[in-house]
Image (cartoon, rainbow, N blue to C red; front, top):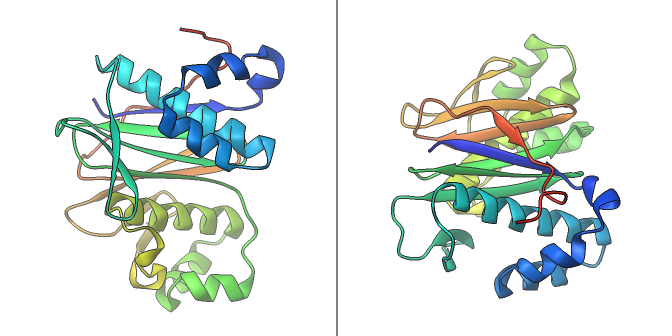
Length: 215
C-alpha cells in the first residue's frame, strides 16, 4: 500500500475544472480552501483534497470521515490500517498513503541564508553538508524536508525544535535519523521530497493531472 501521488496545479489553468472539483470536496476541505486568500494557495489545497480522494479510492475507501489529532495531523476515523499525510509547496501537492504511520514533506528549492541555516541545522549537519558540497541550496532544501517529514510523522509540527532533530548526512540522498524510521528521498524537478516511515521502501511517485481527470 505504500504509495505516493503528486499533482501540479498548473493543469487547472487549462482544464477549467476548479468549480467542479471544489463541489466534490467535503466540508472540512472546503473550509481549508476558503481560508486561503491567494488563488494559488486555494489551488494547492484543492489539489491536496483531490489527491486524498483519489488515493483513498485506490485503496477501496470511497467515503470516510477525516479527524485531526495532536497538533492537527489528519486520520481516517475508524481505520487503523490506512494512514496518509499531505504536503504542498510551490505549484505541487503530494500525498503519501501507507498501512503504517507516515509523514511526508515537499519543498521547492529555496535559498538558505546563513542565519536561517544556523537556526534550523546543527553544527554537525552544516559541516556534513559543506563536506558533500554541490548545490547547497538544493541540499539544505532536502534536509529541511527530512526534518519536516519527521515532525509530521509524529504529528507535532514545529513544536518539535528543528535543531533537536539530528540527521546523519551520509550522502546527498542517504540520511539517517533512527533505526526505527526510514527517510526516503525523492526528487521532482526542482522539488525535494522526503517520506518518514517505518517501511523500507515506497513506490515511485505517480504524477496525476488531477484537474483533467474527472471522476
